[in-house]
Image (cartoon, rainbow, N blue to C red; front, side, top):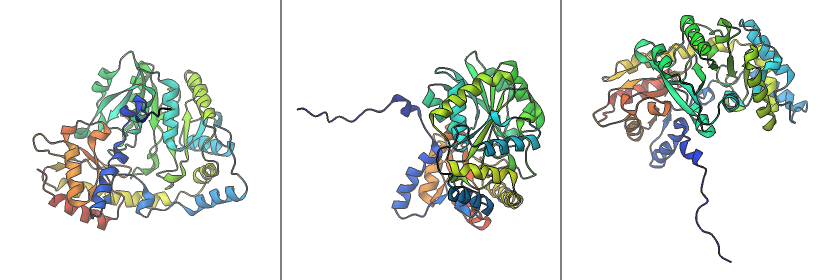
Length: 399
């Protein structure tokens, strides 16, 4: 009997799938193996930098486990968690019933469910540039195409509405809005948000409102986008990962707007959710504790983030050839480095990593032009450590 020895081929969709935030770690491991300590400024995990999950959330999960809530839940999530999400939206000025809420395995799963439900192969979704790369990765998986709309670093990283308008085609199905923004730290004023809603409504587009960092604006929580237009076709997202300091729990939620125009989308999302059974059960009880309980940890977290954001913008703007828009929320900055002729953002990031052990992510991994020189910094480390890192970045000679 003959034996086939050739490698098993992989699906073509995998070749389209990239996720720079984690892919860059492969290079970091090589640097570590060569004996250089790596400072990881690539992933926004507050727990890795000493910001710990509030005890009352941990108690809610452990109590759920002790009480036997370790089996499958209903696919949309436990009723208590969906009611807590609906009540929280109500306090923020958005009326939505728990029947239009799903508890998901982080915001990431909610995004994938929605895109899979409303976008067919060959269709298009408008995503900001720079963007959070999960969107482009999911679109690659489902055979759809991202179409980048420009956000302007010379105008506080706000969307370029004219560019966005020109990007809409008959194939466009949805508009992604990330506000507060990852990777830039931008926050959009209400007039910009209204313009985005009006533009989407004019063309019959669904808005995917990624609001994971809504509680981490330095001047206080940002209201949901849906508050400005309750009848607009908006699907809103958030999670426990960032503002509640529990990224590994994969506890997120999505709320589908009340307009009947979204009823078919809601039914399709629920159908897909049935196929994956449910999100992690015990962690759903933490959603109840988080949204209905003490949030005082957020005050201190926002203060610490503002301190680091100001330090980051000040220090990076002082480096010759570098500029940085001051973030207004979250824990990311998107500096721009003037590149030598023929060099790319990836060249800069890899050179910095190999010379100093400082790991950031090249901007083209977020959809910017490789020759523009953007890169993303996660500034969750202590101010002392960040200061030392920025000293090394200033001393690094890239040629």
